[in-house]
Length: 85
Image (tube, rainbow, N blue to C red; front, side, top):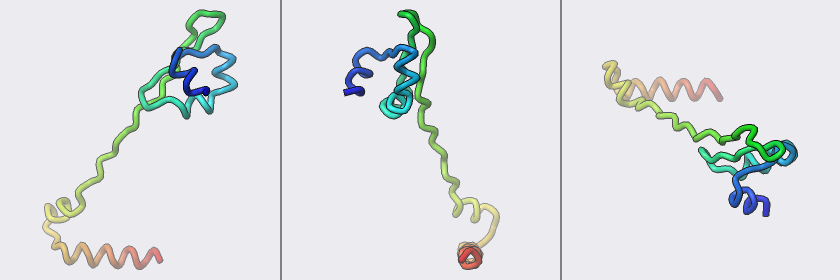
C-alpha cells in the first residue's frame, strides 16, 4: 500500500519521511525522487542514486598487449588461486 501512495503523490511530510525512510528508500527506483515537505512547503528532495556500472577490464587483451602468452597467464592464475586455498 505504501508503494501505491508514494508513486501516486511523490511527496512525503518530513515526519513521514523520517519514520518511513527505509520503506521510502527501498520503494524508489534508481533516479526516482520524492519531495519532502514541512507544513505544506517543499523542504527538500530525496533522490535514489542511479546504479553505477563498472566496466570489467579485458584481462586477456591486456595480457596479449604486454606480450605475455596466454599459457603463461593461465599458469600464473592457477598458481595464484592455489596459493589462496
